[in-house]
Amino acid sequence: MIKNDYISISPEVQHALDKNLPIVALESTIISHGMPWPQNAITAAAVEEVVRQNGAVPATIAIRNGKCLIGLSKDDIDYFAQTIDVWKVSLRDMPYVISQQLPGATTVAATMRIAAMAGIKVFATGGIGGVHRGAEDTMDISADLTEMATTNVAIIAAGVKSILDIGLTLEYMETMGIPVVTYGQDEFPSFYSSKSGYKSPLRLDTANEIAQLLSTKWDLALNGSVLIANPVPAEYEMEPEVIEKHILKALDEANKQGVKGKAVTPFLLKFIADNTEGESLEANIALIKNNAKVGAIIAVALQGR
Image (tube, rainbow, N blue to C red; front, top):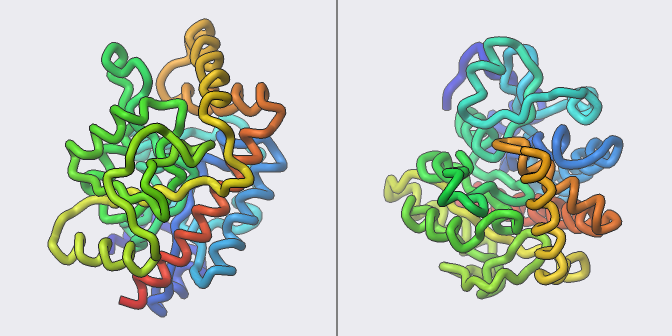
């Protein structure tokens, strides 16, 4: 565990660390860049409550006043939910945002790294970043993937965001030695849908089996994450063909407007939400809560080993 002047741990999370209680890290990009106010703050609080109800302690992570915050207060959540121009922070941005004392919402990569600093092993999010469509021309590959190759924090997500190239992302994770396990089904999910057209590399059906895999991996000194793909609840999923039409429209609009880099994902998600009459946002909220639940159950199982 790394402790230094750049980390501030909330009393609730510190107590959990001291007592060796199960903890689930949560990211803050969804608060500042994933949803409109007040839905973002309501969802963040609800996701934390889901973690608590399933036996673990939530540790939402963000950056503010030169500190990596591990565990946010209600005031912190409201601040990140309402403040304009909060940085979307990946690994390359961390030293700048911290040294300039800017507010930052952490992506998967940054959240993983900060969680690892505190010794937190389980992280629940919506969907991971990956290889963007057209990456053979743009070289746009998320730092989430390179971070997953080296940092010992398991990720529970509803698969790869369907706005990305799922096939190439799975290939990249194989190259980087990242185990990909789908929870309870053979097909790899695609964020808004339980279906993607791709077979999952691995399948496990219980939290105890997943906890055993994680323990075995790290006991063997095989560094890096495991992606635990947890399908969106069936009652909230969207048909892949329907969501694909909206993705193509969103990509076309992003291209017309010259949207680049880390601005692409939030632009696409907002465009899709606006053009599905909120259906995609409803699915997004449902899958994040479901991932928090499964993350907590896995954290409890892992802590018991």
